[in-house]
Every structure is written in structure tokens, then in C-alpha cells.
Image 1 (tube, rainbow, N blue to C red):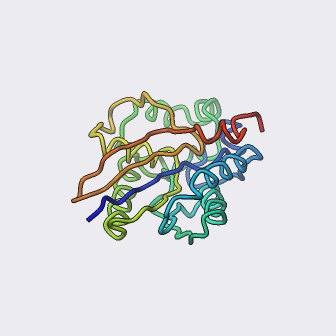
Image 2 (tube, helix red, strand yellow):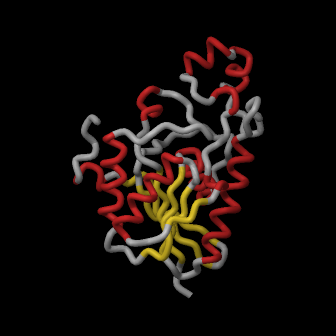
Length: 211
């Protein structure tokens, strides 16, 4: 059986990305630049033999996935398990606002404890567990095929750590680009990383310019 190829995309830039507001399960629309980024990803994938596109059901990811689907002619299947971490009381706030309005909660968050449940939200480990279950189920369901998954930075961070064996407690020393392409393969219940954070398609399409 041939390897399953999983191409994982972070959604395009949003208005709250620009403002530095934490989105979590809240949402904000793609910017003009974010739309160009999504179109650039779609263009780069147009010749791939993609079977299906999975996406977080949150608007910023699903809109990105829809643009890819329009170019590739494939169906988008939403899955709530591909959502970003629920950030509870922090959602919609910038880091300075979090520090000012919720100093005790923000101080605990600064410790980077993966088991810390944000009030009204969830822990990093809870997001990790649900999203990794989803990725494994998708990979098993589409053995030997090529699939696209559109999700969020935190979810991609978790999959990267899972595949290379990096603990959730370890500091993140890598960039998670909007509309970056991350390519993995899956075979015999084993994952392998092929490409991480590829944004060459964005510069070719002029999508790295200011929105």
C-alpha cells in the first residue's frame, strides 16, 4: 500500500491576526492578504491528485479551504476536532489586554503548562488529544491517497510535535506561517514529516506584500 500523503495548511491571515487578538473558537474574517494567501495555496495545489479536503469548521479555516476547493474541484468536510484551542476568557483580547484585565490567569498561562485549562476554555493537551485522534482517523480512512487538511497554528504545532516526538512542554522554536504548507506521510501507523512551513508559493504569487 502506498503512503498516505497529508498536506496540512494553516488558514490565511485574519483581521485579528493583524491586531494581535487571540481568536481561539472566536473568529474574524480573512484580510485581503489572507484571501490572496488562500488563492496562492490553491494555485500551488491545483495539479495534485487530491481526494478530499478536511477543515476546521471555524470560518477563517473553512473559508481558506473553500477557496482551495474551488480551484481543485474537491469537497470540503468540516470537523470540529480540527479547531484551534478554546481560549476561554482570553478570546478576543490582545496580550496587553489579557495582562491588564486578567493578571492572575495570564500569569498562570505564561508558565506554558500544557495541562492548564484556561477558564471557560481548554488546555493545550486537550486540543492536542482531539486533533491527533482526528489526524490518525483521517489518515487511516484514506490509505494511499493524498488529502488536504486546513486548520490552525496550534493544531499544526501539535501534529509537528507528535510526528517528531517533541514534548508539549518544550518551548516552540519555530514559526507557524499563515497559509504555510506542511507535508506529512502516513504508512503502517507511522507518521513522517516531509516539509514544514513552506511559503514559497506566497512569494511567487505576491501574497507576502502588505494587505
